[in-house]
Length: 72
Image (cartoon, rainbow, N blue to C red; front, side, top):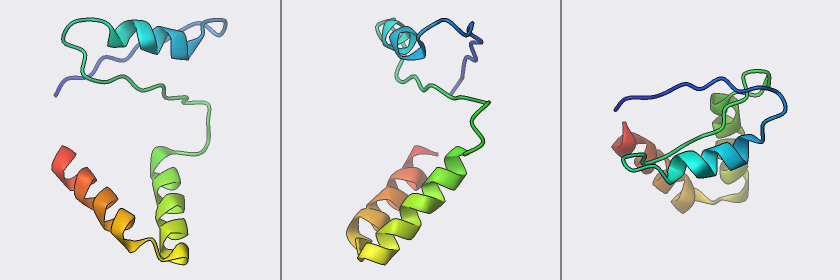
């Protein structure tokens, strides 16, 4: 899979740009990543996993892990 990194100006709405890009032929997904945000995607995933373990949501936890393994 190939990725395209786009740097945008501060006054641009990233969600609007994401929606426009998703309409292009051949684009399968788009994600808004904020490098300024100190909370990384890995940190968010660990927080979600921790919450799933606390609540006993093992089925969704296993499904999330399985989805990650299949995507890579």
